Image 1 (spheres, rainbow, N blue to C red):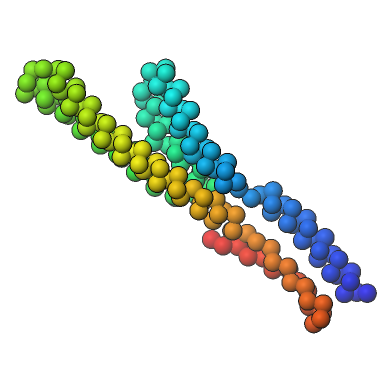
Image 2: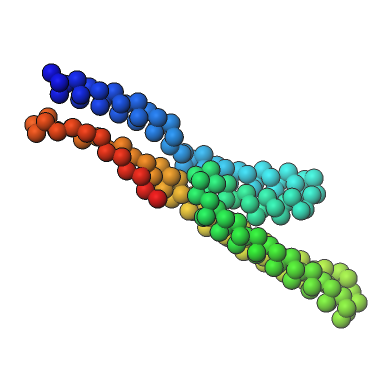
Length: 169
């Protein structure tokens, strides 16, 4: 009788613990939705308002929203840093191209077009980095979901029972 009570108690604890853990699970669909939705909505809104600085900030940070949701901060900051560096370097190169070309030719339109080409290349590279970032979002969510696990152990033949906890860093 003692074993039945202990097993029932463990099962009650496990059912409550399992429900709590399921409530703590992160959703891959939500993470991908945040990673794609935040930059798309943010960039469209700021472009419509012609607010270019917030546009660049959202473009740099937004695609990593899924990593931040999954609390994979290092992965999110790595991709945000790559996009920020790409946008920063392409902006500096575009401005220097505009100013350098204008000084050589005296034609502001020609310099602006060359600077826009340089920035377009940087913007394209930034978008490619965002797509690669989105490819890693499901693994970030999976890492979060596998961090803490309960492993019940009930063996009625050998009269063994217990609860194991596993936490992965």
